[in-house]
Image 1 (cartoon, rainbow, N blue to C red):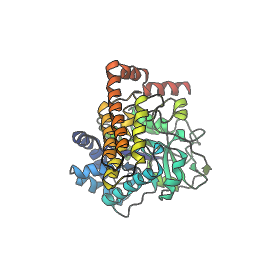
Image 2: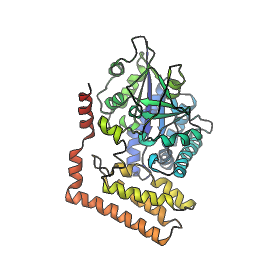
Image 3: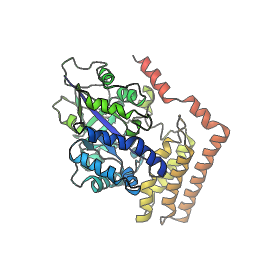
Image 4: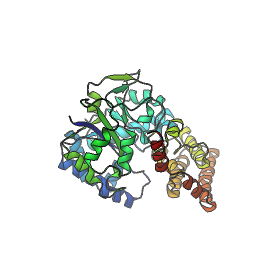
Length: 399
């Protein structure tokens, strides 16, 4: 019996990303991934391609890549999902901005990949989820949401589907499988099949499934040459690649659940359940506190068309991630995010008092970031936290 596998790839670059970085990642990862799918059109992959990345491809002349993706979507090789156009951290935003981000993303995908494409599934950036998002996502026409398995109570199950009382369905990624793929521990399709069957969840003849979800950049960019593993999976006669929607459509038993607050960040089990947003909104992180004050201020004011467009782009989640220092740190991204938020306020019709508050917050964010670097605070935080080390320790403890 074949192993049913849902492969989910997330393709994204922040709107403030440098042109040469976008070009490098596109050359090393995105183009080879799409070339592989053109070579093996029988493969099935579900993708989230953020609207802001598509706009960057258009801006930098990757029209052939957009055309190739549109063709693969039309023939059923690629299934696209909905998401946030600028990779906003949705659980921390007001409802109007959440709706706008999702709607903008859908409009961009329809413009570039076909007005008739079906977007049944939804990918919340960072897989960051709170139950209050469900009514919004459902009202916008999506049928299922992709979440990390920590968003579900109980053990991992490979032979059931999951649905809440409102009829929203959930596709839970296998955390261990995804982790072992990201870190390069899985190097062949045969190894992947072995990992999927460990531990067995439903007998030797069970028609179960597994879902791997990770950044597309893993293949070829973060791990050079690793895109070849995808070809190995496409060619494996014992693996049945399926889109996530096709898994949702299978006649598995359905369990009624109440999904919980979660994200896909690599943390030990205790914190991934109690503090799933730690990398983006750490209550003990002074920079995070100021970033979210500036974000809240920018979202609360009345915007005209020009300043709203600036706000759309300014809400990308990377600015918070790179300020966590547990262990990720990139001061240029911190400054770029704060400056983008500031510009959305400055170009609006906000009061002078509000604009002054925004300016002060921007300067405080940047000054604090530099202070953390000069005093060694940032390095001490980084040294105390290594996400993969914590994850491996946690995995061994729970064996």
